[in-house]
Amino acid sequence: MKIPKLRTVFFMFFCLNFSAGYASEHHSGHGAAMGGGGDSENACSKPQLTKFLPENLATVAPGSAFSFYAFNIEKPEQITVTVKTIPVEVTTEDKDSFFIVKGKLPAELVSTTARINIKVNAKIPRCSGENGWLVKIAE
Image (cartoon, rainbow, N blue to C red; front, top):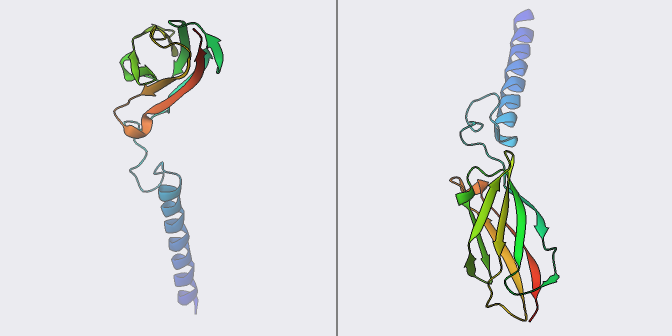
């Protein structure tokens, strides 16, 4: 009589232990119990692009300077900036935990609204990012 109860207890323990390990592996994406999935080699933080100057929808002169902060980026070479599909050369200043990125609007853009578009390309595609903002360029 005791053996069937003992088998039941072991069976339930096995099922609960297996399902907890399976759930932690497949739902969290970090691979706690069964290995894989959470290598630091594959871990990344999405780039954070903030503090856009001039502000969104500000009116500026042609050829005006702009800047933004870039966090969670390994190398400044990962950053590309375009304005109305025109590539823009930028300079970066390393501040240890982030980069200050500066550039100038193309002088040929006059009397238009343009998006300053930022792309950050990483080795792992899910670690890449994109952001930007609009400015009104006066005459």
